[in-house]
Amino acid sequence: MANPDSQTQAELSQDQLKALVGQAALQFVVPGEIVGVGTGSTVNKFIDALASIKDQIKGAVSSSVASTQRLQALGIAIFDANDVDRLSVYIDGADEIDHHGNMIKGGGAALTREKIVAALATRFVCIVDESKLVQTLGKFPLPVEVIPMAAKRIAQQFAAMGGKAQVRLKDRQPLVTDNGQMIIDVTGLQIVDPLAFEAQVSQWPGVVTVGVFAFQKAQICLLGTAHGVEKLTF
Image (cartoon, rainbow, N blue to C red; front, side, top):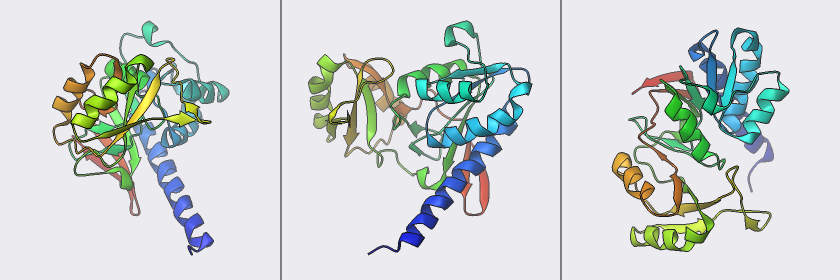
């Protein structure tokens, strides 16, 4: 039986790592500009840190309703992506990142909007703890946002690749994304060529977005480790 104290300590230490990288990401925020902000527990730490310099920025473009609400609650102005020509930086987490900056994202079901905001940005800064760094993408279930009527067909296509797809549930019902679609999570894949994989799956009818970020990969990763924040450049 696990020691509750040791479990709590492990959880606290991961939380502290997230806070470390969230704070470290402030160095990439350009004063006077609008910052792209992602979604998830690590990004929440960045949003909290961003509030400390909110008077130095114009505001943010957010990748989810949840992040928008958190930003607004802290007094940070929100801009629509259509009102922005470019962003100097997009700061977001990842479920996995490899040693080339390719990522799996979508654990928070915001992958489509995350890709949209990332595509606006000159630089993608990924903030993660060291458990997310992998040699090959695929250990974390691959999220894919799909149009509901295509879910079964897409699951069959992943099965032909050796993957197993399941519809993501929330309260025993299919989760509905901010875009009104559903998520399937695919296990059993090893994604050795992320760019080719993303290009292939993106062409399947009914796929809204596949959670491989290779075309919009990270240029910088701030990695939270037991020894502090390590900066990886790709």
